[in-house]
Image 1: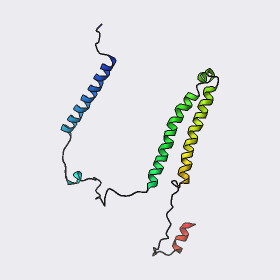
Image 2: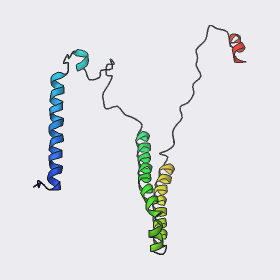
Image 3: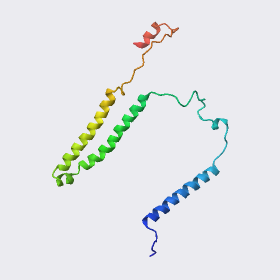
Image 4: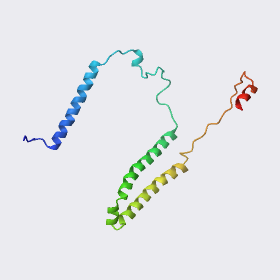
Length: 155
């Protein structure tokens, strides 16, 4: 049997180097094979056919950012709650610690959820979750078709 002088880390290093070399060679081959026909439209900033209007420093409503952060906060909460639920349900650990583990884990999670709920209440009270509804303006369009013509289709 042939003995290897490589350790497990050496094997991993060879795989990493092989992946890097393979990726580099494939990118180079793709560059050689692909068609290269640049024109004015392809070299513009946007390929959608629309010309840019104004500056890229446009302002947006800050509430979108706040709602995104609150959404991420509660997504992270789910990431922490799922493993907690798996570990909390370990019957051997609960019985092995005479239910002390269960009470500790339960209290810990209630504190965690309370802090998150406190943050949500704070954002709610500050008005970050209140959206201003746009005022509906009635149209001043005058149609050439009389209103009585629509009544037979509305019934």
